[in-house]
Image 1: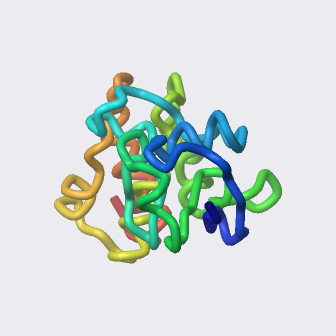
Image 2: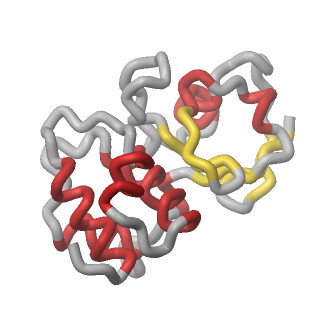
Length: 150
């Protein structure tokens, strides 16, 4: 199967029913996307498919053929972080950090759809679970990245 991951055509030879999460982590060794619950509830495994935030733990790899898959590895670089990554640091969002890659991918999808989101937009879009409870900081970081004031 050929997948388009982070703008690169990538060949994988795997069971078509294998969840995308495990193809990314175990087959391609792209470990930025995390396993959390396995039932699409927590959002740690969030990637973007054609711009939409998608839970990869329940998405069969066969369902993503022909789609643009974006993982956390493509969001920014250490030398040039994405605006969300810079805002995450400025607002001191991460605590344990486990949910952060999924949170960032969901936030990136939100900002692409709504460049100046309201608090209500953020609350609706950000359905990821953070056990550390940094939701207010996440909201502030999304506003910062959008150029809005919190």
